[in-house]
Image (cartoon, rainbow, N blue to C red; front, top):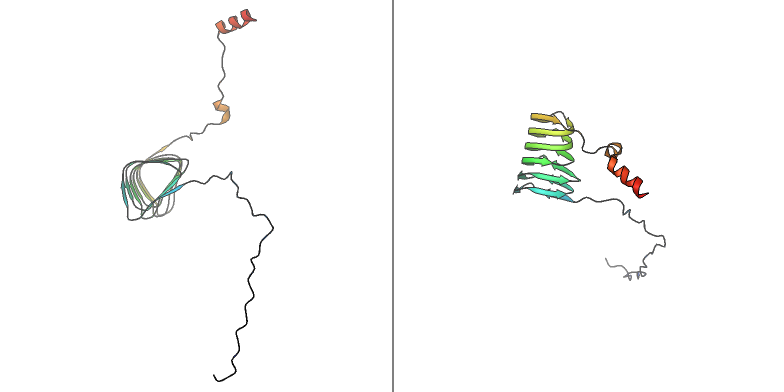
Amino acid sequence: MFGKKTEAPVASPVTPIISTQPEEKKNLSVETRSNTIIAKSSVFKGDIEMEGDIQIWGKVVGNIRVKGGAIRVMHAGKVEGELNAPEIIIDGHVDGTCCAETLDILEHGELRGISRCGSMSIRRGGLFVGQSEQVENKKKPDIERVVSIKENQADKAKAKNSA
């Protein structure tokens, strides 16, 4: 309290440290998918067509078509309409038709309607009431995509005459 006063030491200037090592370059070949979120308190009426993923926390009345992504109906989400995507994950309520390569109904999920998918899983606690139709995967092996071309007799005759 009544001691000798000392001056505060002078701080030395701070010099930034510059790294001479190159930063890691991000891999540009990895594609990033867009992610759309329907908020918990929102209601959307109408059809949705998009690329990328969509998470539904609110309510959607209409059809949802997704290319190259997934539809996720979250725990608080509700959808009335047709869902069409490569992957559908349901943890909320869906009334309608689900068309997908893979369909997963989680613990709190409920699907009332039609399921058209290549593979389907229902976890304990999940509910499915309706009709299920197994659909073959749309992707065909490369061997089946090759189509042989048969020559007509007229084409063979023309080829011989022109040679």
